[in-house]
Length: 86
Image 1: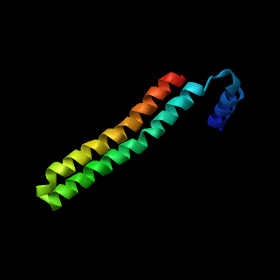
Image 2: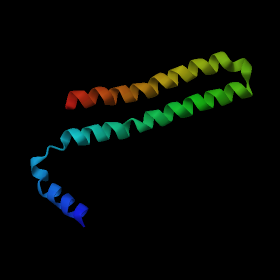
Image 3: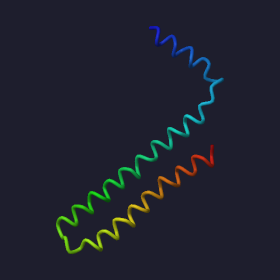
Image 4: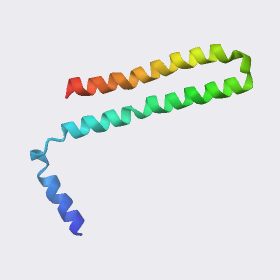
């Protein structure tokens, strides 16, 4: 019960608290999950492709790094926009 009373007090004072920076940080953190998962999939599939066909390593590696750069660019754009819009 004490926790609920403390939470009610905090919510009653919510108009005095600026939650915009917290929201922006949370949004960027959630947005970084997508590129992180994408990069994991890219490298996992590249390893699988090289394991199945080792002679295609050069071509797979080039495509892997292009995909990695594009996925990482999404996270970096979000990071830069986080600071621009703050």
